[in-house]
Length: 308
Ligand code: FAD
Image 1 (cartoon, rainbow, N blue to C red):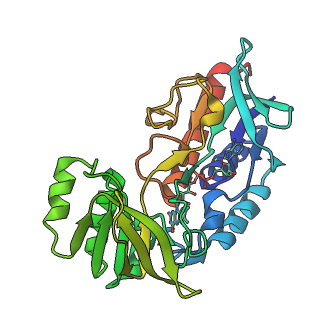
Image 2 (image 1 turned 180 degrees about the horizontal axis):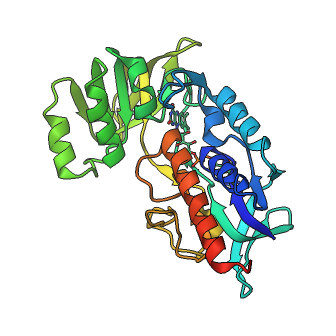
């Protein structure tokens, strides 16, 4: 068995693996797609100490850093199940039928943004369609944008962006917003925000290179219209990649892995970090930090439980 088995190869998993390997203990890392969400990102400007990088470059840098250490990499394999044995080992079953086990396991399987599923959305991803206000807000300084979704994340994004961009249209499919009342009040008080309720988005429109508009229509039928704008922030949910865990450990009602302040899950010997957890601020820097925290907690667990 591995001393530390990391599941996931995004920033959190990479950081966890490096911290473990630097302790000189047997470390494995299994990942479906090394790099994770970073691979889908273009410009990154908030990884502190690296003023500017691009997703594929950062993913390659993460991989190079991990492979400088003695980390056994199991690439392009998905974990499909997790179980705790009586022997203190945790087993991770892979979709290909194989299984790996660890004295400790660190879960870092990340998350994926829920998409609208309308024409143009994929074509203009990173060309005006974005999912991360903290990441991409400054790219739309002074411009017109739409935020899709009236839950807490959509309304928080709209408030945040209203301070940077020229104009925000918030679009909510239902007849009212689900966001907390205090957020809705704040949103309604802003002069450069318009809220459209009961409205569905039907298409992201562009000129071939970038977004130029958004086609919307009333949910109950009626005349559609086109909004002229440069950016679309989709905020209709971030889905943690935790379905494969079933009820092996405690998940929040959103399916996020419940952890304490040092990355411990409800299962002894199993730790978690990054976007797959209840951590509310999902960023590269926070994932890197959480990966190191989970790894140091795993090491602490090992020195307390393993025979010398
Ligand atoms: P992820 O990056 O999601 O990595 C998860 C890893 O787990 C992947 O290797 C995946 O293949 C693997 N995995 C998943 N399921 C399984 C399984 N069952 N078995 C095995 N492996 C599995 N953040 C910033 O700080 N700045 C930015 O500019 C920025 N821009 C972004 C732009 C976009 C388009 C997106 C989508 C995100 C952006 N983010 C940005 C957010 C940032 O990418 C994430 O917060 C960060 O990548 C989370 O790291 P993670 O390691 O927790 O998860």
